Length: 116
Image (tube, rainbow, N blue to C red; front, side):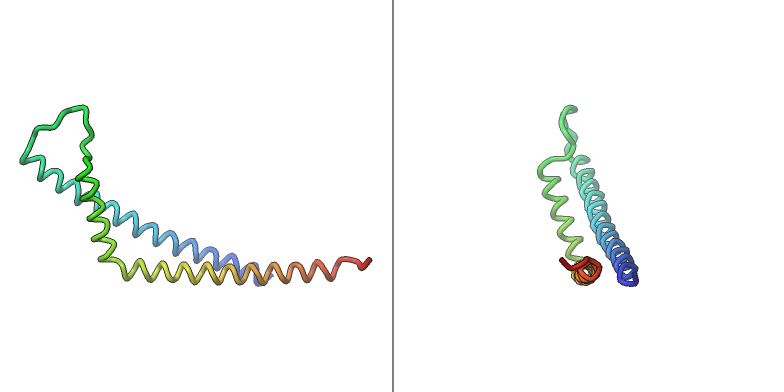
C-alpha cells in the first residue's frame, strides 16, 4: 500500500514538472509571437501594400518567429535543461517503482494460488 501511495506522489510530482516545462515553452512561443508581430508592424509601417485576401503571416514572419523561439529558448536553456533532466529522473524512478509493484504483485498472486 505504501508503494502505491509513493507511486501516486511521484506521478503527481512528474505531472507538475511537465506542466512547468510546458508553461515555459508556451511563454517562449507567446513572447516570440509578440516579438514577430512587433517586427511585422514596423515593417508594414514602411510598406503599406498588402492585399486583403492574404494572410498577414508570411514565410519570412514564420522564419523570424522560429529565430525568436530559438533565441529565447537559448536564453532559458539552463532552466529548460534542468527541468528536462528532472523529468527524465522522475520517469526512471516511476518505472522502477512500478516494476517493484508488479514483481510484488506477481509474488503475492503466486503465494495465494493453490498448487496443482
